[in-house]
Image 1 (cartoon, one colour):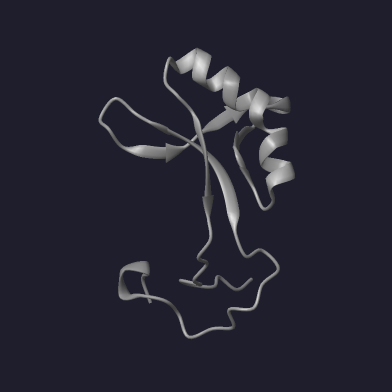
Image 2: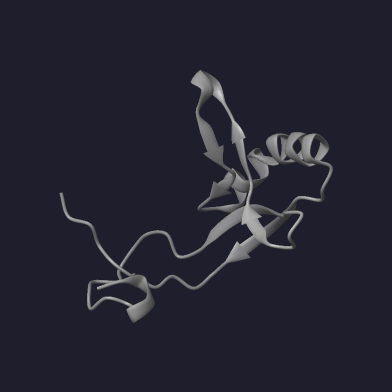
Length: 88
């Protein structure tokens, strides 16, 4: 099944019921989740499963806004729908 075919027929029970993400609009007018380099050269998306985590990422969001010269906005996504499960 591909994501375009709709949700999978799988167990939708989960602990994470919403996510918070810092987003920005690029030069083409497309919104995306902001990611920022952290320790060891890793790039981390600025996303959290609770407001406390999202707020803890605000310093990185501010750095991204300054570096890119665009507003960065905190948004909440509340509807989770399992699209596919990848088994080991």
